[in-house]
Image 1 (spheres, protein in one colour):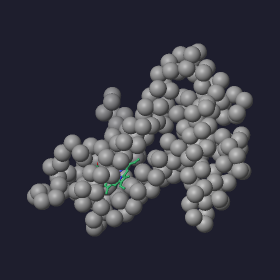
Image 2 (cartoon, rainbow, N blue to C red):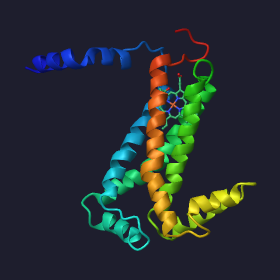
Image 3 (cartoon, rainbow, N blue to C red):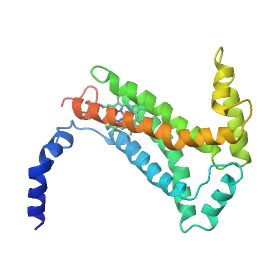
Length: 219
Ligand code: HEM
């Protein structure tokens, strides 16, 4: 029965050719450091899934943001767990992506023909940091408020464009309801869409070019 269903689908979708193009590739003998890219991908998906669940209860306004988080922690079934995974997952993702970046750097995997894989990676790293920065404000507690005050203040010290950057980030001169709305939209739409687009390009390049060797080792 299962075989019949598969054959029916195979005839119409060409599943086997997708499988062989995407997954059936020769890989050189590698080590555990080569698993960090996949770990980053796993963490991104996990952040996406837990984030979607959090969004069912989170309310991004200065009047209700703090209370909605309290509600998630105390009243929603497993809310504490989902928020905990999202909270620790964020730090873990930054660390994992960073060590993955160090691995590709020290193994010289950024060299020809993988320059574009590296460049998309650099933007992915910056967007990942952006997710952490924008997410930190959302609980709208004292720590969130003052961390964002300091963070945006630092952006404001950049020569020439500092003042402009600070106003764009805050949506004015002070941290306000506009800042919260802006950070929320960046956190759930702009940055994740950017990450999704870049991960797709990153993955396409890895499938196209294959994985690099450990320097100095034969294939
Ligand atoms: C969300 C972030 C990221 C995801 C999901 C991701 C995913 C992956 C995956 C699955 C691989 C193949 C397996 C591996 O080598 O580990 C890979 C390879 C690679 N990544 Fe990333 N990556 C991310 C960020 C970065 C960053 C920040 C850089 C560098 C700035 C980078 C540069 C590279 C390079 C150069 C390769 C090719 C490695 C080789 O062929 O040996 N990636 N990435």
